Length: 389
Image (tube, rainbow, N blue to C red; front, side):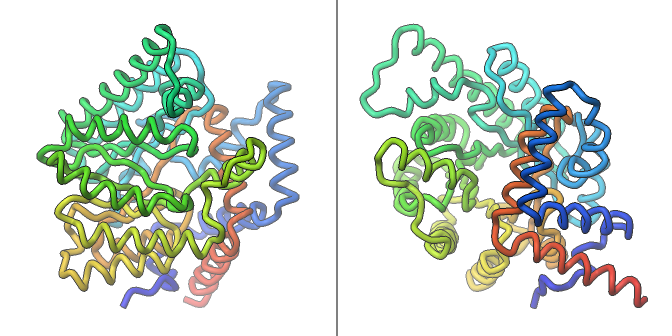
């Protein structure tokens, strides 16, 4: 039976200095006050154009990112690959608004697809629609009954054509691509565009994956709808199942605008729906391929048990586990050690432009109950084990 307490396997790729650096980083992240101060200081330094790239690259960037370019990620790809863990190259630059920037992002995502082609260590590519199109336009496209102007319709068509360019490149390369989920008020358009891409590219193989955030109370019903939708249209339906990343923003907007929150009432409800989603996908594996994006030990164990009960080979490429680089190595490395398919999200991009992503990682680690404490306790356990050798 797999044990997530096996730190020898969990940290088999880490030197003592790697573990000590991670220990102090998680110690800092564990303090909301320090994280809040650090965010303020970082934003001030950026505004004043102070030279902060070097210290950030040596600490938090090194923990959670693979490099500033695809080429700089090669070392991380190789290191993960030695332990049977794949890489998902994630261009994590956010907040762009110009067509020139959007087109450049499309080019970089397609470069990640080309880098993945014929490389068994890079099973997936990934992108966010807001990385290649204006948020307000995607919101308008998601609004029921909204009729875009002629100019808006033309701009929305450009966004869809960018999505198509990426999915077409993925199809040609034979590399599956995740389209990430985003806020609920822009998700309807993303869901529709994603399915449109499945109709084009998921006939023989699951190339395009949609992402379902199970902290939304309507996603289990959506998942069930996907079964009939896929069967009626004779397509393979790729699902990346996650708990979600926009909870506080979602609740605040619902209160501000006076509509019912789309978010589950409790974390237990989210966990329940996530695990129910795993069962639905396994029961309908003639339709679905799955990437279980989770840092939750219980859900990881459940998926392995469900696969065993259904007599699914751990090496079946329909089923993947995924975690973020720099987090939950006790899950990633132990699951890979048990010969299941595992991949790490490996963010990359220029240090200053990846900062919003890094600051969000710090926030999430601070706010998720038990996450940072678990990381720290495992690191301490492994350092102690090595000291006694």
